[in-house]
Every structure is written in structure tokens, then in C-alpha cells.
Length: 176
Image (cartoon, rainbow, N blue to C red; front, side, top):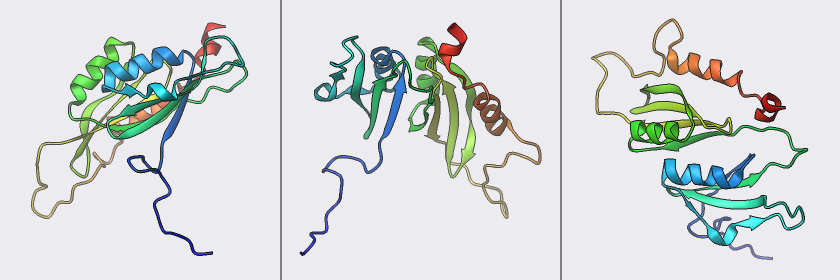
């Protein structure tokens, strides 16, 4: 049998796509639309007909050229926070939109590595978002190399991540 060499994903699709499970998927989709100018693929919007409770078993949202699949969490499913990186042109505006919709700033915009900056926020569903954005062109001084290390002591890019990760508890546990 002769195999035809072709890409495994359909044309126009990505090789890797994330899947986020939250309580209140419809509101989560609204958040993504408002914060990231996302668009929902209406043809993928799939209510859980077997549950009959209006929850979604599958939906798809495009953010830029990437696909994020989303669904409502079932009562007996564990809390699983998403940790997602998104490239943005304007981190301040993205953070403003997120905070206006209940997100919490974790890491204010800061220089990072390889010509990019980083900012982070925690959304109301307890998912952590990494915003990467191009930094203004600067070059290291003669003999220096660019590095994400800020100093001998850990800087805020490092410490805010560690501080936040330990807080990612199931929001249901806090309410009952």
C-alpha cells in the first residue's frame, strides 16, 4: 500500500488546539469574544442533548488563527484550569478588557525574552492567560546577551506565576 504524504490536519487548521472546560461555557465564550475579538464557530456549537440542562458538550472559538475548543464542566468532572498563551498586539487594551469582565491582573506587562514582553491575567473561571507581545526594538549593550532572567533575585515575571499557581483552586469549593 502506497502512502500519500500530506499534512494530517485539514487545510486552514492548526496541528495543536487547546480544550478548556469551565462552569458557564456560554459566558466564557462571551468573555473570549470581548477580550480577544474571538469568533465562535456556530456550526460546532453543540448542546448536551443527553443532559437536557442547556450545557454545551462542545463549542469552538477562533482567536486569531488558533482554535480553542470549550465545553461546560459536568458536576462530577474535576476542576482543570487552562494555562493558555496568546500573542496580542496591545497587552494594555487586552488586560483592560479582561479586567472589565472580571479578570485579575497577575503580571503587569513586562519585558520578557527574545524581543517579546509578557503579561498575565486570571479569568473569572480561574484560567491563567499568558499574553505575549512584541517589545519595542532595543538591543543589548555591547557584550551583553538578552535574557529573561531579571537579576540574581527572582523578578515579578517569575514570582507572580508561582504566587498565582498555588491559588488555582476549584471555584465550586469556595461556594459550597
